[in-house]
Length: 330
Image (cartoon, rainbow, N blue to C red; front, side, top):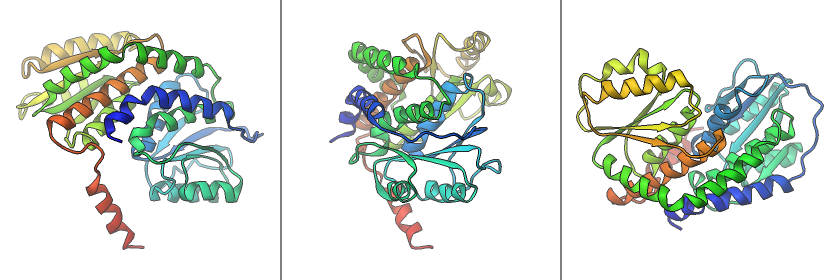
C-alpha cells in the first residue's frame, strides 16, 4: 500500500477502531487516580498530545505526555500510565514503562504486538490490540481512538467522545473531495518553501502532527508555533531570513475569541514579509470534529507534497539506520 491509501482509509480506520474499543473487555480498577501519564513517541505518541489538548479542560486531574526514556517524578501508585507503541518495540516507551512499573503505577497498553503486548500479557495489564502491518503514522486513527476508550474505562472521561468520532467520520466522508482539493491547493503553495504552521493554544498537537507528516511523508523541514505564545517572541523574528517561508494557519470557530483577534493582527504583521499565507478553517461543531478535519487535510497535503518532491512517502531509511546503530550499543 502507498501512503495515500492509508490516508484515504482514515475514516475506515476510525470506524474500525470504534468497533475494537466497544468490543474490548477491560478489568476494572478501584484506584483513585491523581494523574495520568501518556507514554509514546512519533506516530504512536502524537495521539497522546492531541488527546491531552482535547480533554485537559474537561478533566479534574492533570494529564501529561511523555516522549522520552524518563518519567516525571510524580509517578506513583495513584498514576494511570497508558503506554502506546504501534510496533510494541519502541525502546524509549519500554524504558519509561519499566520505570513506571517500579513506581507501582497502574499500567495499560495500546499496541499491535511486540514487547509491549508480551509485557501486558505477562503482567495481566489492560490492553487494547490494534491491527498490525502498517506504518504507525498511517494507522494513527486506531491508537488515537483507543486512547479515548482507555481513558473512559478508567473513568477519566465520559463516553461523549463516541458521538464526536461518529460525527467526525460522517463529516470527513461528506467533505472528502473538498478536503483533497484544499490540500492540493495548499501543497502547491508550500512546494519549494519552508512551511511555518501556526495554531491557537490548545491545538498544538494537530500542528505537531502536520509538521511530522511533512517531515516523514514529504521529506521536508518546517516548524510550528502557538498563539498567543509566539506573540511574545517569534513574531519579532519576522525581520530577517524570511525568504521562501510559507505560513499556514489552522483555525477553528472554537478557538478562544481573544486568540482569534491576535491571529488576525499577526497576519497583518507577517504579510509585510511574505504574501504566502494560507488560512484553513476546520468544519464541525466539536473539538474532535475540528481535529479530525485538520489531521486528514494535513495528511493529504503531505502526500501531494511527496509527489511534488518525487520522494517515497513511506520510506524511513534514516530512522531505520539510527535504530540499527543504536542496537549496536547496549
